[in-house]
Amino acid sequence: MNIVDQMGKDADDLFNTPAFKLARSRDPSTSHDAADKLDVNKMERIVLAAITSFGSSGCISDDVLNILPAYRYSTVTARYKQLKEKGLIFVDTRKRKGQSGRQQLIMWSKEFYEEVDNA
Image (tube, rainbow, N blue to C red; front, side, top):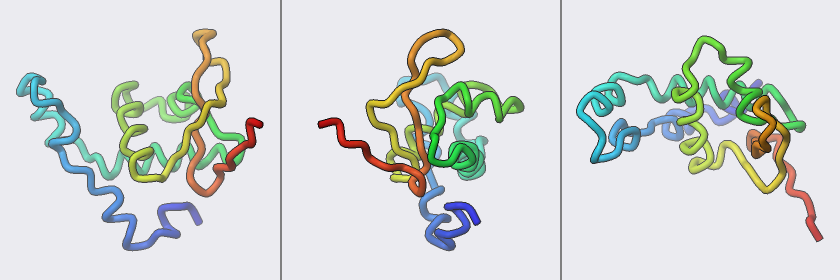
């Protein structure tokens, strides 16, 4: 059973991101049209499931993108912010090297996140 199933009906409220949050007021009308048509609830669930699948080891954005090749970069990465705001995924200062050679923050789903003592 994954985190979304465990939350039951409360999950419907968590995944109800309004379309107006997906486009900035200064964005062109095409961005607003796209935001209205995007099934955000579905994408948030898909991205959360991908992150959850990495368990306690967590994942970086490259990992998520690699297991969701059918979705565009911007469609996947835009979901991180909403999932963090809803407390469904966590990020701290830990990083791993991505495919570009640059460091990327590690993400964990709520059920697998464990704080580390940096003292």
